[in-house]
Amino acid sequence: MKLPGQDAIARQADEHLVTHRVKLPRKVVEHPFRQVAKRLSMALVVLVATALIVYADRDGYNDNAGGGISLLDAFYYATVTLSTTGYGDITPASESARLTNILVVTPLRVLFLIILVGTTLEALTERTREEWRLTRWRSTLRDHTVVIGFGTKGRSAIRTVCATGLKKEQVVVVDPSSKVIDAATAEGYAGIVGDATRSEVLKRAEVHKARQIIIATQRDDTAVLVALTARQLNRGAKIVAAVREEENAPLLKQSGADAVITSASAAGRLLGLSVLSPSAGMVMEDLIQQGTGLDLVERPVVKAEVGKTPREVADLVVSVIRGHRVLGYDDPAVGRLELTDRLITIVRKTPATQVTPDIRPMHRD
Image 1 (cartoon, rainbow, N blue to C red):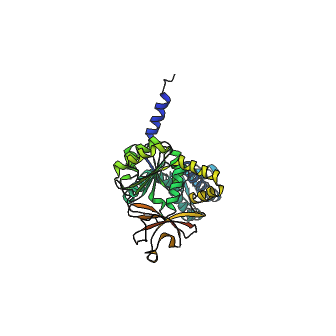
Image 2: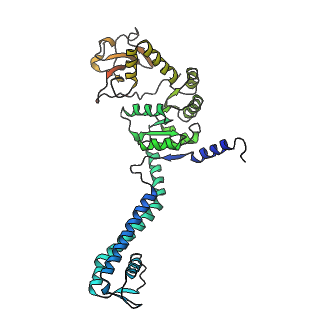
Image 3: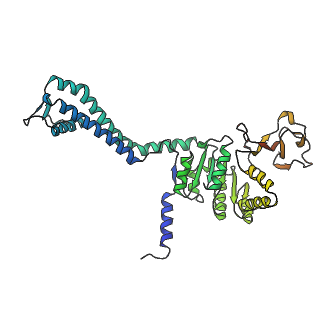
């Protein structure tokens, strides 16, 4: 008989068991049972080959029990020989049998031991090797990107960031689902299985050393708690978060997020624009899709553009970033472009086009 709430308690216990688990991407993924079966098959082939060699030269062997060497005797001799037991009841007597033992049976014995001992050593050293990888990974991880939630939003966000040149080794994904983390590691990212609202989980992701944090959780209240925890651990990181409802955006900013994207209102805006003007909707969708067609690019002002107005620049300038202010292309405050300005432009996406990431810390009031 189950008590009310017993299933929920069991689920919480299971989630607690997987907390803090770090998964690093693997180059070759093969089931352990398959590896053991493969090596046992190799050892069996060596054993059968040795027995057949002995049986083929059976006239050159002596059996202390008397009689000739049968096929069973050959397998017995091969077994005790390859395992280095060597009872001595069956011995090579002729010169050809002894030469065969030197040139063939002995190398097969060494190969047999390598196969079995190698399997044992691999099983014993796997945990040590994994711990060494984790220690080395933590010691070299600096200025990385932490992605909280690897759903549709999280995947799209990190692929966009990686398109700017960020290496996959510099990305850590945090998600409570073990299957989701398996998918992340299969793509080459390091993963942490756990609840990102808990500080010990974020510490496992080395959040205190991260440069930027992307929060793409399924619930707005979870995003608020994650932002609070992440900002407490890292005061200087750039935190970007997504929320479903627009009314929760101010709360998330108060929790420490530098930028908040409202997914529901953005989708609704695109839907409404597509109804009013399908062509305008297609252009907006083209801008949103990363890697093809039109793309938004942030880049610094080059020397040849200094002193010009945004309209005089060859690229289509949308906004000008001056200091901590984002000014429209037609804002009178822009005036002439300065060398320290950065431009947000619309360009035609090509393989050589690359967004220049802004690594400056965002201004916080």
